[in-house]
Image 1: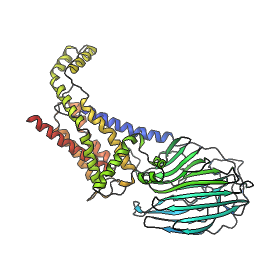
Image 2: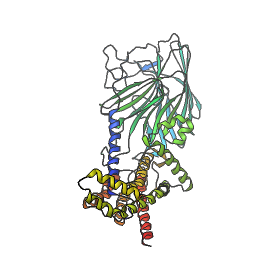
Image 3: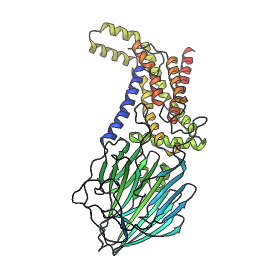
Image 4: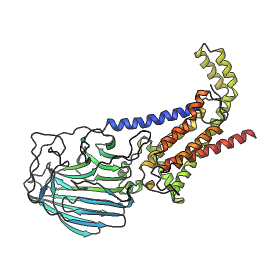
Length: 537
């Protein structure tokens, strides 16, 4: 057993960390690929002769299948409208949001979030689709588009009315600018003699392709379906799906089509539980995704109540709308650490309004938090160093009897209160914090396009000049050099490559995460220097 002089880090610990790191991301990719969804059940297509609706093509114009994209020989193609009904648009804009409401389904088009921009410095546009509009209303299995006569109440409040046969529909759509959400109420009256069996709302979007899918150069870009249903939930990563996704759900309560920082969602508040389906067409040139929220029309009178959301994924804002909306965040299995870390950073930001400084303060907070464990580690290492000659003697004496050697070594370490794993404890504590922070930076809108200073203009994006990853690698290398050790040559060679491996891995990760690693390594160097001075005195 190699001895170490006041060293809180052992080569085997670093190797274990790297193995854990690789296993974690490999397992995440495996789960995402294993559960993308399979073919949904086919539905029977019906015709609708009412003149108050418009029949449009399915979500994939190149296919002549039913609305769920499942071929059904008995299902006729939807009929075509001879004369299209003229579209009327009602515009709304404030300093943060811009959108238009169409009389066709009262769907929302060109929903722009003006506070944020994409890589081309253009406003973020949610739910881009040529076939459907965000939250539009359709009827029946034919996906007949319900056309409304809309009355503009002002300030983003719209009331639409229409009639299909004897059934009357009134939709009240009110935008709440303070939360970027809509109150949506649909009243169904005199539906007893109507042939309409269901009403459906839609969340469409084109599927975004990540810049990089390499393991060594991972991308934070992602696009997910999120469905809360029947007391459970499911998240489908569309960027890992290898085939078209078609899946149905019962008793749905929350539906969302989202990226890592933005979301379009429906929260059900009705007395009758709706059904839901998700579809993603990946096999065509213009890949599209679609969420369908379907409410059965099973009563003569029916009231549908929903909260519709389109905007950034701010945890405080979503909780203010409804506590259940916080489910849209995907912090993974480290949520119990990630959420406190996020709120700790937000508190630090409230004192010094710079997210880079907040990350630095969080790093120091974490390092001071584990400092007692570092002290325990040093003491354990010193105890191990003290009994090292006796351990070497035992190895020589019992070299032909491994079992007896183990027993004698354990007894010796117990008598001297030495623990060979003591050096691992601080590292094991910091591993979940690292992964939790990885999730926080990759999911929190607070860090999206937030500058730190100088060349770091976006803490959620990688350092485009690679200064921070290189500085982090240098500090890790220096930390190795200032940490006295008596490793065998094999261990020393493996450990020497760790700074290079971490540097390469951090090249494409967010600069906020790299900043955390860099400051943590600087703290480690300072800590080791102080401990060495105390030992010398």
